Amino acid sequence: MFAFLFMLLSVGLQLPMPFLTRFLIDKVIILKNFQLLNIIGLVIIGVLVIYGVSSFLERFLLTTFRGRVLFDIRLKLFEHIQKLSLTFFHKKETGYLMSRLSGDVDAVQGLLADTLVSAGQNILTFIAGVACTIYIHPKLALICFLILPFYLLSLMVFNKRVRSMSYEVRERYALLNKDLQELLSGVSVIKAFTGEKRATIKMLGKIKEAIRKEVKLDITATIASISSILISSAGPIVLIWYGCAEIMRGNLTVGSLIAFNSFIGYLFGPTRNLYNLNLNVQRSLAAVQRIFEMLDLT
Image (cartoon, rainbow, N blue to C red; front, side, top):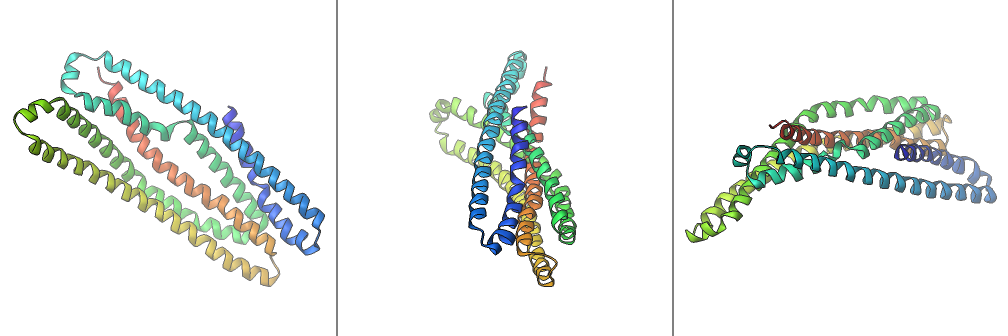
């Protein structure tokens, strides 16, 4: 609850900054009012300090909550595994179970409260950005809105692929941990039959396969992120060009263009953040699926 309130405060404190900048450029500097300049400067410093404190408290509360949730999930998994029959433990090696208890739970972080609060914060920032850009210059705002659908297209293209690949990577590393545990537990037998080279070659092949899967996943996620960055970079270039033309026509002030350019970050920034959050959520959903598979075992 308190984390949500600090999140709202953080979003609210971001809104005055572009308008203060516009006021400084269009009014204070032109009028050469040093007294008002000092007042505005102190106000900006005060807003930044409060914003910093609020963001810290929000992150502290969410991190504490996340730690408790991860602890509870690990505990429930451990308690459930202890109740399973000996037949299950004969089929599933120790290394594999350790990976499921550790790696899968860590990957669930993308679905916890801090991710949800971050999503809410970005959504509220985006809504504020929409309202403020329309208020400053509706035509420039319309250009922004025409570019944003391309983000949704990227989202639809990469979502399913990233999730399925994440599941494959988690499973591959679980099997790798199983093989590594078997290798270490049987090292005396391997040495007795001078099988070190054969065991190394076998393990090396499995490590390479796991790494290959992970690299493929990272490349796909990187392409997804780059696509959103390219789209967000195209927007400001067009807006600056059109905005400068509006200034020359007398339809826009320099301060308003700078403020509008700041509010572009309130549109494209949250959209990009939500895009990346979604990719993380896809990875976490794969881990959640694996956790439920474990809990469904009897």
